[in-house]
Image (cartoon, rainbow, N blue to C red):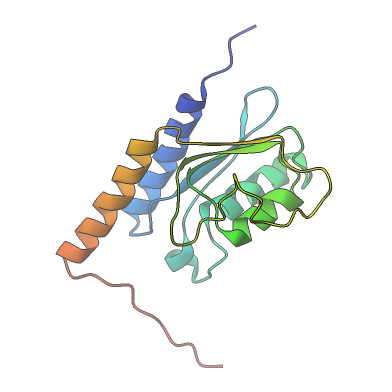
Length: 164
């Protein structure tokens, strides 16, 4: 039987998805879902601007992709994500019953601080573990470069007003 890839290898896969987001002008966050056999069963990258909805976070899209293949109960699966999940994504992760979360770098603005008891558990059975700092510098760098480039070019997200 082949040896399961390392957390770093899986995070590199999430970083490839983060780069897709950056290439499309989205905040570069990527996520993958890995099942108990080590197979990637879900992928996602930020598409908030493209889809025009705040729910199009990388984690949410990866969860949806995995659910289409395995059902919504993703027990024994892990989420690898380049940036610490926000409160919304953490809720979806817990509802999906993932075994754990591995993230690259903390989000001081929106991160849920998953390693603390900040979040009230939705179920008595909580995640087995949370691991942070995997490929941390690469995860920080892609975000820094994205925002540095945006500021350099004076680009800002435009808010669109939709008439009802």
